[in-house]
Length: 308
Image 1: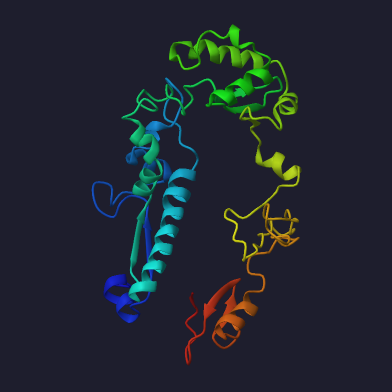
Image 2: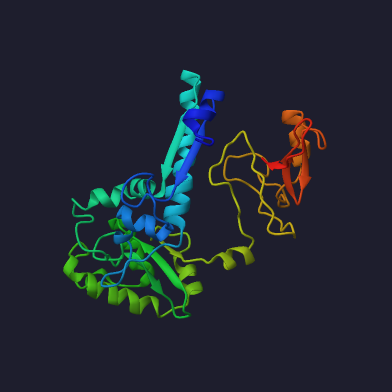
């Protein structure tokens, strides 16, 4: 049975938490098949929701299945298992797969299929590109602005910035029959200025209109790299960008004392030996050694170099 969690690992250490993550479910029609992110979200039903009207479904790189539906859901399961162990004293197996994880993340639009918010074909709904005041628009210089002016007060601020008289609109904004004409009006208006000019118009307003920034732009402008979740008592440490230890942005957000990130990125493996000695009492050459940049365990009387 190899290293079966139930038959081997948990019998050796009942407090152990073993996370097991797969792409497809471990049972059912696709269990024995190879796949990638696009396949997992396809059979989960999520991919059918993504894309423009009258176009093929659009896969969002491998963000939805691999990282969010897989890694993040598996990590959440580990945290829940840790909480459960506090009460029971026992570990358990955490099962995660990218099909069910992606499906869970899409709960809102899936439930929306039975509600006017999402009960139309792909690309015809409020939040999937069908609504002209929840969409992206190209600017004169080939860049883009994002618009999310769903509420009346935000929509009014958007019209003010675009210098559009509400009386000139093709009809009430809630009337879906006017959406194509309203989209054309917004398209032509946004094309009249560069993105920088529109940023100057909308920065600091409540129009819910912001630039679509690229990662190269962010990095050239001093990328404000912050933790995904801020823990006030635990400052974060940035990971170095390659070998040049590109300086990371300082600060972790409002209300947090100190710089948060260190001023230089932390190269992978830095201070690893110090941490092993401090946390576990391990010393290089005794409990472990380094081979080809990897940590290997040294067993007493043997030298198997089985990577940890």
